[in-house]
Amino acid sequence: MNRKSFLNRQKGILNSMKPDIDEMKRQMNGHVGSNAKNGPTNSKSFGHAESHLEFVQTHMRQQDQSLDELGQHVERVNAHASMINSEIKEQGRMLEGLDDDIVDVDESM
Image: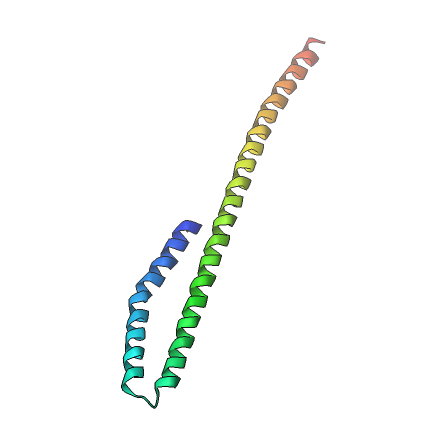
């Protein structure tokens, strides 16, 4: 599995969880409003959950950015490796030609 398909799969999983999270928010908001005694505690818990969700989303965005940068570096390394491979193949052909020339000169002596 390549990096992009992995990221797309993970984003799909997170997006599929979003309706559940939204429903939990609605339920928590409804629960907070229905019981004044528990309101501050539930509001605090909800704020903590919301804060944690924001932290996770921010962290994921940073990871996405880091992975994108890493992907760019990997693509550059791949390009360099391809150029090196081409150069090695060309030098191999040149050495084979030199070897053939040496054999020809050796046989003519």
